[in-house]
Image (cartoon, rainbow, N blue to C red):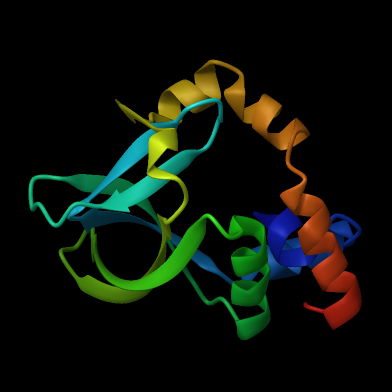
Length: 147
């Protein structure tokens, strides 16, 4: 996350400061499903409106406007940040923004995307190695001086 929020050229100190300024909390998003995408390593979250559908994820609190701008840039045109409510472990409902897939629906594989498989299969490293979106975020950090 620090590479998106700080840029690739940020110092270790700056990355540590940024990560210490945010809070990450497990959160449940109801009425959505997380799908694998055909030919991609990363997932697509889609709205279903069905209570039995849910996505377990992470709520990131303490982000500034520049951080959100960097995340919007990273997520790109196939995702839209929409208002949503997530349920925390203590049963608190929190209003937040969630990136949902608005790209080509034909890319949805129909299979649920698994974070555990993403990590254990080595797909995480492949995803990191192939991300041109990091370059887009780096340009944003350079041109806008996003911190």
